[in-house]
Image 1 (cartoon, helix red, strand yellow):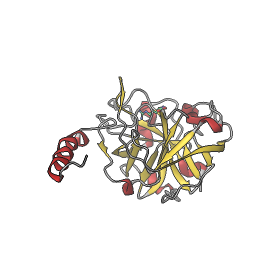
Image 2 (cartoon, helix red, strand yellow):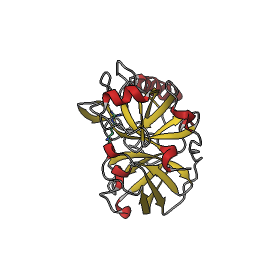
Image 3 (cartoon, protein in one colour):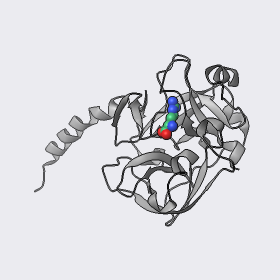
Image 4 (spheres, protein in one colour):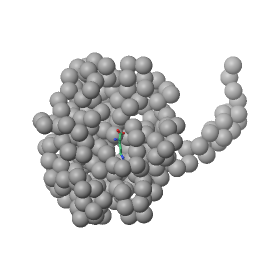
Length: 240
Ligand code: ARG
């Protein structure tokens, strides 16, 4: 059965408003895969998304150590080129091996970064890694991407990739929020009043400043609370 163009147009119009709703905490849906071609989802073999990541090479994914350390490589499927996880667009690959930063134990102690090697390289543009610490200057604005929660205590997740723009916070403000803050291993991003943040299951996803991978979603207390920023792995400390 073929639907007339008018009906298709109406369907598109009815579906569009959902995309305009706020996503993550305080973000918006990514509408075009070319905006974030390097974005990948980490899923179980049955397709359950549990973390994000970014292609830094055709067969290399940067993510958080805490996303993978309790899993075997072959139990992790990486999905690229797919904004809507209900579809089977893009491509997927299992992980053949991964490397975790030396001495990693738990996110709040830093070193929360891992590099995954894919069985099959992906045909998407890779995300260059930040080369200078200027990306961490307070009030630089980064964009964080993920399929995680849109509210701290709402476990419903959107199958659509979302993003939010969030300013880097000064080290002093971050130390005031978190006694465990280690400025050599991490940085914080958020607004003093809260409202916009990464959240559960966004972990491992990229924080992009000036078109480069500057941070990886790592930890925080709750999501989007006032004076409680998100904490990100300070990528330049670990990758070059
Ligand atoms: N640890 C979380 C995860 O595994 C990410 C938490 C980020 N929290 C935040 N408030 N930014 O998905």
